[in-house]
Image 1 (cartoon, helix red, strand yellow):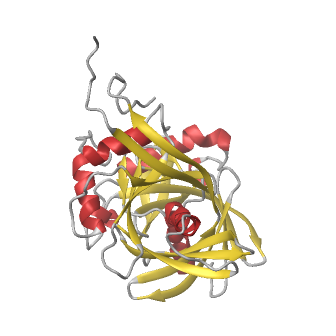
Image 2 (cartoon, helix red, strand yellow; image 1 turned 30 degrees about the horizontal axis):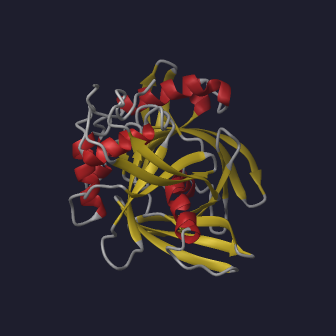
Amino acid sequence: MTEPTRPAGTVVRTTDYHTAGEPFRIVVDGLPPVPGDTVAERCAAAVGAGGSGTAPRPGPLDRIRQLLVQEPRGHAGMYGGFVVPPDDDGAHFGVLFWHKDGYSTACGHGTLALGAWAVDSGRVTAPDDGSVQIRIDVPSGRVAATVHRENGRTTAVSFRNVPARVSARKIPVATSFGTADVDVAHSGACYASLPAAQLGLDVDRGSLPQLVRAGREIRAALAGHPATWHPESPLLSGVYGVILYEDLPDTAAGPAQANVTVFAEGQIDRSPCGSGTSARLALLAEDGRLGPGDTLHHESVVGTVFSGRVISRTEEGTVTEVTGAAYRTGEHTFVLDPYDTLATGFEL
């Protein structure tokens, strides 16, 4: 008789959303205890167990991440979050963001999805017409998602990010496509931005292999650069995403851009990237291209749109608001058969 390869009993329930095309898998049931008194401490514990761009040392929580993100239950573009207790009573809940390579300190599209989920699930009561704010503790701080409703339906979600801070402009970075001048901004995570045209590339689906290659090269080249380090926490330091963008014709409300954000170890954001949009807003405001009352029209490689605006500029940085739409795509019960020799799955 074949013996099981691991103990029975792994059952994980999720609710899945997409925000502007980017998936977000929300996990509440089936999580082991996560050590730490705050969301940031829990994230640090998860990173220590599962790695972040390093060889994994999986603990119980990271085995669940692998189960949900790897094939055959997930895919290389999967993203999600573990719902955990908040830091204090000032927030409705906390979340640990994860992707195929580990964990992240911020996720704008995930925050938008969590706002919609909080209302859809009844976790937060919302009016049929009007708006309700959901406060969420994430590893980079406390953010707020405002869910907008009409006739009993969620029509959009806006989120206020932690303040975004520009840390460097026009850092010369050599790549196999040529040298580019790269801007760096922190907006819950560290983003490097550059026009794709500097490397002779277009922001379109046909150019994705080259854009991913360029993004990975730039991330590697900036490893250890002082501009990528956050003064408050190593967890927030180091380039998380590289934003390759192009300008589009201005709209009546303000500037317009399209982008491909390459994050982690080469993952492509299908959305315009929520926290990356915050970084772009801070840079555009510093350039004088985004004034009070202006709105950035921000497109993804699949044609979906976030709108963004600057709320205020403070000593801590630029306070931004990003708006998009999130839709529920399914509810799932995942199991790990103790006889399954593929265990938590694989990557191709």
